[in-house]
Length: 243
Image (spheres, rainbow, N blue to C red):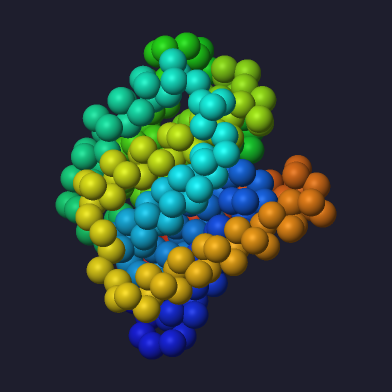
């Protein structure tokens, strides 16, 4: 990690921004935060910290909406993710850092573009679609910290409304991030850094809730995706520079 107070301040700002956009739009923590956390902490530590924070945010968000979870769709999604999380961890541990950065940057950029376009495909419908999306999300989450886009695409192809999508995405986020942390282990950070991350998450949530009442959802989502695209491109550039 970047040394001293400057590194801690940067990490705090990243978590705060990611938490803010998550509460503002219902999505985006991993897409916005992972590229920056990876650049600050390195691929392994950045991904697993993102898994921890994203899982905690999903857990808090789910508390008020768990009754709207569609278990019929979530069981195959989460079961498929549980099968591919270890594979993602295995691949990430064996790739050189520069190659891993390139892969993460590409995954984020492609995920943003795909979410923006709302791709529709027969393979992402029904029970088969749940398994495909869950498997892809589990692998991407443990390897690169961005497991949400496949589930977003599944929801688009299933015709879910935003109200239906949010609690189910949070349920998936709790489980897939728990699987990923179990597979990758906890990040090796000191107690003060953990404290800063928790505080940043809480402050970001408060700011996001306030902004959600003032900023049009469509404009906010566009900003989040543009931020994520910029972060993904930066990570890709750093990886290519190191090859």
